[in-house]
Image (cartoon, rainbow, N blue to C red; front, top):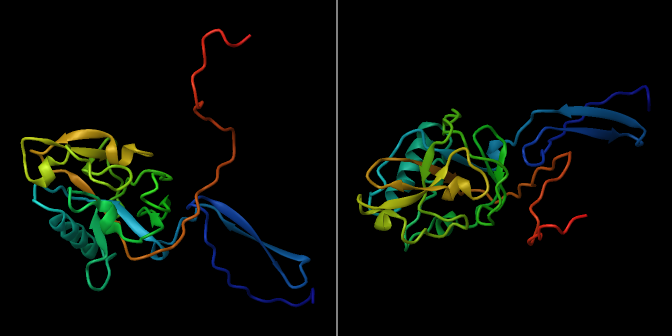
Length: 231
């Protein structure tokens, strides 16, 4: 009845980690309670966390296993790992151990600030840059991150420190504040120097709905436009 009151507990699942508001209808559908969830990001506990390592590591440790251990050590120290201490992989590849393969069936990835990063990490679509370390500290602009990995999770053949073994070569690196392909394949980095790596949680399979944006659209034409073709 209109004179009665009740308490309703609702769990929101924000789209893509973007700010949202929602309307909740109760009773006979004529009473409306509007709930403001502006600024609310994803609950990291529901999704796989992705972060840039706060520390650097040599790109020539010989295989991907030491980098997975490196990431798990950082995650455990930050209190975000599984009880068994093996919930993460490093986004780094060799010819016989790709990041995509080690990712398994993991789905739904968020940054350390709770905002959505990607749904299917191997599909080539990311919503925004990674840009935070395991402690939630923002990474400086233009920071390179060693990957030796292409956007689909496969090895970057010919640009991987010779499978993470040789210092006199180079490897593919991404930008911590890069989007689209740049987050993993922005540049080549020297194998002589230590670099940060991406660490990716692999324990959850939760759909992450892409964010939607209001406003005008900008797109790249699919094809060439001849000069003088416009009146």
